[in-house]
Image 1: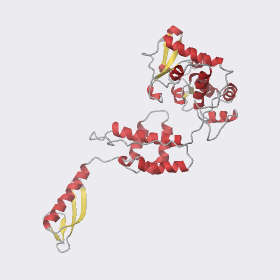
Image 2: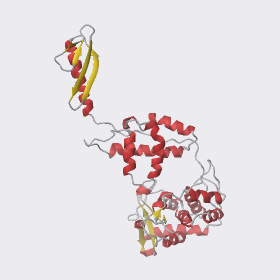
Image 3: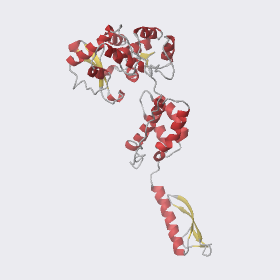
Length: 359
């Protein structure tokens, strides 16, 4: 091979084979092999190789999914972050090494198929993928590199799986409720009874804070304003208190800290813990893949009992936070009184028959 005046370029006229081997400031070592029919083509190949290397070095580096997941876990403050971490740990071997722009429905499908073959519930897999989707959205809309460019240009559309494996809810009878509460430790029984009388979701009960309480002096009571970030439908809502729920709240006022429900001075992260599962079994309540056995049954029980005592659908929707509600705009004391009257009827419904049907 003969060398060109361009340092780092060699080319063999007889074979047409050439090579670029040059250190470029700010880029590093550039090594490229090529074929050319003349010195002019060889020099063009040289300039092309150096130019491509410079462009690649100047282009923003696409982050990997493991980098994005690490940032998410370090910055997210929600109470269920440990659950998110567990899901990410499971999915990481499948996509952790991929660049963010390579994470999409196609690259996620083998993971989905694998989890389904393991007999996992579609809701469980969907919850794990929802965290992935959240990370990709943050990478596109929030996170920026040093050049103020997004980590990801456009988040992909990810379809959450839903195969026919949904467990049926199990609304409690009054006798079953009594057996369940008696099998529980006191703090968990209070949270459970509060859920049965307010219809609040598990995460709302666990996160319920004193700063959310709003006094309603006209009714000599208070309600709790639930910020939209804690609501499944991302809408603000309120929790109204019947006599049972109000007595629980009053009994908790001496507790220290910002959360209403605590245990040994710390917020309770989940109702569906070993204490709940042990009590559920001790009460003789059903378990299995075809029936719900977690705290969401409290919400189904609340809804069923409201319906059994004739509370209208629109009122039930408000109480279950199925509609948007802003207490400062939409709810007058009279309307709150109407909601309280509805939940007070629960104490009169002990003889109502609860059918084992989905709400």
